[in-house]
Amino acid sequence: MKHVLFIIILLNFVPTISWTQTEVKDEKMDEFGTLFLVALQSKDINKMLELKPSPKTWRAALPNETKSLSDDQLLNDINKSEKFVSDFNNIIESAEKTKINLDEFEYIGALYGKIEAGKMIGISLKYSYKQNEINIPVSLLRHDSKFYLSEILLSYDIFSRNNLGK
Image: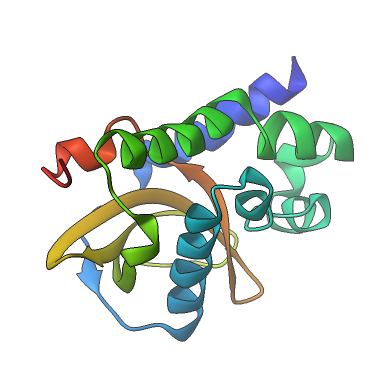
């Protein structure tokens, strides 16, 4: 029950995220965007899970929301939630369905609003594919100047929605 409350608290951040986005070059964001792509290209959810916060990071960034949760709950119920696994699989399935080769993607930047340490932020990771641009919206946590993946915000048929492939 407590992990459900934590997820609800996290999801409450999403509506308050500023989507007044600008394209800004940030070395740490570029590093994250590249690592996200490498994880997608691997088609290995464990690679994507490496981008999630550790229990120690969750606790440091959101102490009140995590104080009643065990490390196991943070790792299995929050980081590897059914929704997260489903979102990751949806992106892979969308690539396969539209015959998109993820290895041909290149990271080109990110769109995001104001970034505050210890807060969830919504961003759109931008990738190029055969002279097309694809945006993958995600929510991130910034802690100690590093970005961590919280959620993939749009995954279902993501490549079909952008008229890519086939």
